[in-house]
Image (cartoon, rainbow, N blue to C red; front, side, top):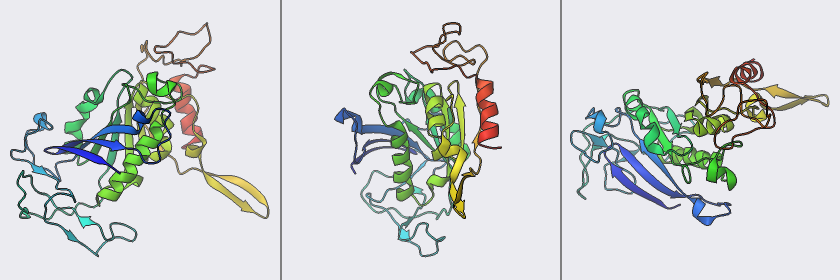
Length: 297
């Protein structure tokens, strides 16, 4: 795994190579995401300039490959953190001298939240979440779509046309961060998505505890969300119900880009932007009712 890291105070932009990548275009195996650390790991500096590159009055998280003070701990929960570093909040520095630890911040597991941008947008469009994540002690990840797009079944652009595995991209980030940091556990992941990003977080709902799609939604629900497996008794097998999953489905009634009545090929229904079209129109309200019955019923 190759990672290029550009340290910017409490945030990082990471260029990664997806392992065992099967994209038709090899260049699509090179992906980018942005990582933002919360104030429990970083000083309460000027949040408005959170990622402007300044380290003044701010703590940066020192990584395993940098010079740092670190120690391992055997006092861990079963299956968690064994043999991994206890993460310490230490002052950021550009020197190669090992840093003196000022305080040992034991923080447990922090929520990992993905914010996924719209079609034609980039990470800048969802950075409004950064100060809120910072103050709420949330680890925030903003993935970059290929050519400003994500593949989310019905939407959109380059990623959809080339069948890019964006669900796999998110899953890989979860796995990588869970291995890298003791305070991240992929089982405590959440997601918010805007338009194309909303389509994607609903498609990838099985990866998250809760999701919040905004102005973008899937018309059918992935069976992996509604079922938690199959069990058999005396040769009779039934699907076990899922454990339920939180959803905050937000959609404007006057949205002319992704219609709240759904996007479909029916000539009698209003058209949506960007070529978004399913076989049948399913409204936002119908999706919400179906989710309540099939996922949380």
